[in-house]
Image (cartoon, rainbow, N blue to C red; front, side, top):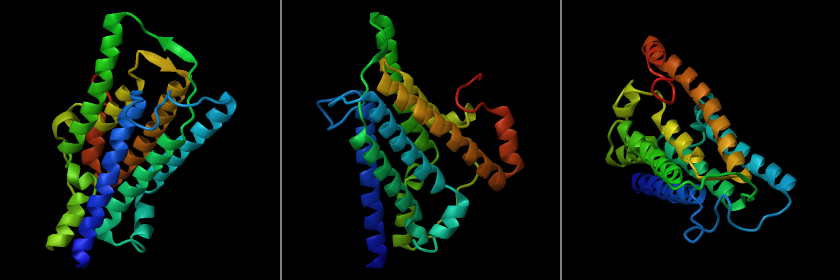
Length: 242
């Protein structure tokens, strides 16, 4: 019963993540009729207050996401939370941080740019969806179910040994070190109508990505040593040729 309960917990955490992820896509894309809040939808207030609230929400997400991913935190955390659900719990807290950001976001609708040329606007709209597609495919290339905790709870339920993943360079990872994050960057910045609120969101999340990747790569060097150092020298971080 305990093993099955762990599996159910992992599935529920994944479903919460999936719901928050879909909402995030629609939130950034300003699909106001499909979700309760979007980047530019809703009531606008005083912009200084909105800026402070939005920066706080981005910072909360970034701190949670970065701190809970660190090895030192995991070592302490697994003395409280059982190892099989450590990843699922991380996914759950990350999803809750995203949901807080989406729910309490304050729109700032002043226009930064608005591209009305049809072909240019279409290219940016397509790039928005391309970014999410790259992100989604990248998760499958490095084991989607392991990344979001389902594999761990499944193996625990079935009594199988959970082996840590080895160093891999599948698919997009042959060309860039962080295609998942590259997908986020494309999706966040590709818009024909950039508002001040959207700019703040994109800039804040970009800073988080840069900081998070810095710490992640230090952890990868400690874990894989020379293999990752060589990989880092040969393969660009986000975009081919850069």
